[in-house]
Length: 296
Ligand SMILES: [Mn+2]
Image 1 (cartoon, rainbow, N blue to C red):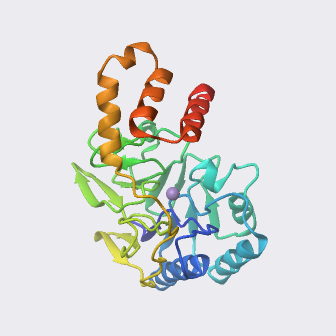
Image 2: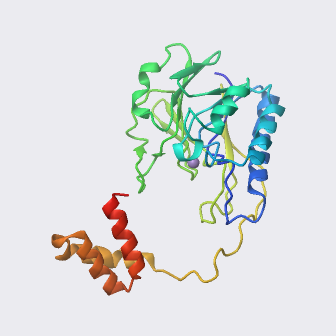
């Protein structure tokens, strides 16, 4: 098995209002840490998608990333295209440019898989169903499925695939897109690897205090390693006059209302009644109705 370093979801180029440090410098440092380990141990680096936070990146910020890739141009890198909102399209995006001009970088665009000496990397980018990739399994090589979909142990509120149900016979499935860390999960002969995102963009219980990790895959199996990084990077409070909202209580009320007769009328009436009983602003209800009408 080829030695691999896996890092998903760097979200480079973001400007999170919840961070008090230089977020992009911090991402560059973390990437460089992983690149250094890769160089020292002769590993291929795999970036599991969402390298960029948005396709419209400041040129100044982009150049700093290019300089880092240039500095490690002796390290082989493979990058999966993530979500369109983040990595943009193959036709026009900074990721496309990075792939075109860095000879050490291979993108997943237009490829089903890439063969390393003893490992086949099979791509299931954000627009490819990860259940459909077994036709590309190699009978001789170690098979690693690179995904950019929410693949989880337990159900979540977003569209997702359950680890128990995923149709794959790959040796490894590398998980990106879902930012929390799930660790290493064994299912039969398949090992699922979920390091959690490299990025920490939000002042949430999940990101505060979390140390990002990379995965190191080799003949000895897979281990997760912490990446040294700054702690205490989040500002205390974002907006001072944020009203306290008891979300649970509001949801409970909504569910009760939906259980009663109002749902037999229509959703718009239900919203009106809900607004009255909970004293929600007219503007909020107007906004929700507009969204419902537009189907967004
Ligand atoms: Mn992401």
